Length: 101
Image: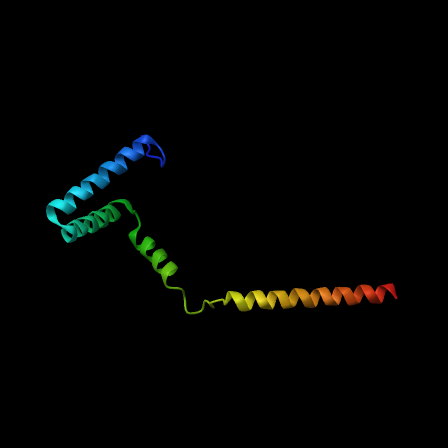
């Protein structure tokens, strides 16, 4: 039994989870429900990720880039590329004019 987005079973499961979450908020309060959900997520993480050290390393590398990695300014890179392509077009245009003479 696989849950796929857009199926009636997925809708029932998601509806049940959200109903349970709403009942918890009404019975025990927002902050206690939030702590309960965070603890559930932590337990789920601990139980499902096989290589936690590698997972945390990969996540940290995605969030915090290396110091050696140069941050690219997209506007200046695009401008530089356009200038290079214009210069190449001008050179090829002048080369064609010289060959015709």
